[in-house]
Length: 243
Picture 1: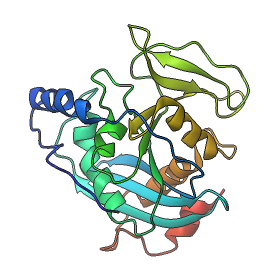
Picture 2: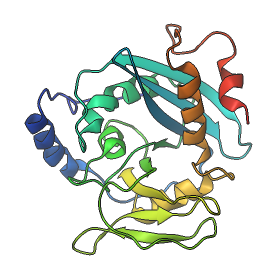
Picture 3: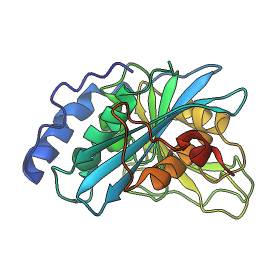
Picture 4: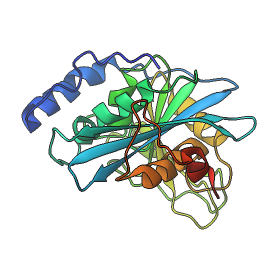
């Protein structure tokens, strides 16, 4: 995948990072929709005890539900853990993993917040500015805003609202009796466009399939040696696709 970093992660202090977030959030395109997506990428990040971020990226085919490609990237952590600034800690590894994907995709789903972020630029939004395709954030927990709990059935949702009552995301029930996910656009998607993309990728797990597979891939590859192209010898595809 073609990546355009543009110096968007070039911060060494929290103050510099917040300033960059305030600057780059103005570049977000808050509209768009992916109609009839055929191939989606999913990304998840694991932090290793060695001081590295391991990003796992998969290309997942919507029609067949099959994983078509798996790649990882491991980079040394260059930014401390600061709530609200995780993009500076994990973003470079995410970009590196996506850059290794050779399969063309229609959009990218990232485990993290999009615009539902205190400064409107979570990991998925920040990364989304660097990508040639739309990007959506799929967060397991709420970073900001408020939402009433959605109904109990998969697909039921309620709007995630900021303090002024503006919709910044969606609280979505993806599986019965499971905790809701918090969906928000990263870039080049409207609120409804981001929600539709996630709904198209649900196959019975709490997470949409692209990020579910990326999570499994990251767990399998954590602490293990990677080849130069970001693959793992010994059957990585079967490890990520089991279950």
